[in-house]
Length: 200
Image 1 (cartoon, rainbow, N blue to C red):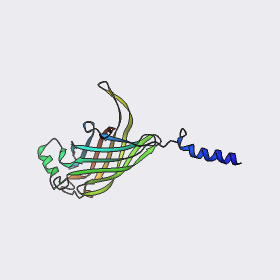
Image 2 (tube, rainbow, N blue to C red; image 1 turned 90 degrees about the vertical axis):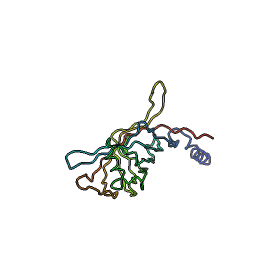
Image 3 (cartoon, rainbow, N blue to C red; image 1 turned 45 degrees about the vertical axis):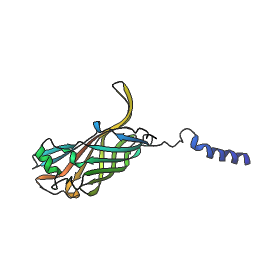
Image 4 (cartoon, helix red, strand yellow; image 1 turned 180 degrees about the horizontal axis):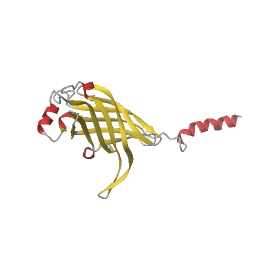
């Protein structure tokens, strides 16, 4: 009995080192701004859509590919809004909408990755826009991680396309309602690579 107890204790101590019991560690990723874009669309008099994008995006992702858990922290430069029309861009940057002078940063933070088996189906967190923070759910249209080769250089990349729907009035942006729709559709294309180690 004493031997059995000793063996049992030894197994308990060794368990964290046995195959299948090692706890995977999350990897820190940096968003690739060249291949990451946020698009938006809203109804215009229920006949067409006002569309645009944000050009300056920064972000960090902590992701454990084994468990599928993680966290993200994205920032978007509100002044980088681009609809393809200078006049409209000025209106969107003004106090009538984004008020980029007083609220220069749009921020998305999330730490809940919703999965269906091995597939990521959504990311849930909070969006801070126009000085207001509201919950946001991003539906994953596709997402995967793996090695790619670009110009002969191999690198590990995680990326996907995501979609969210929000009410702009919930963020205090009510100008031109209802002619310009309250519902805004966000589409995000995100690509990220493991962060380089910090220089000592």
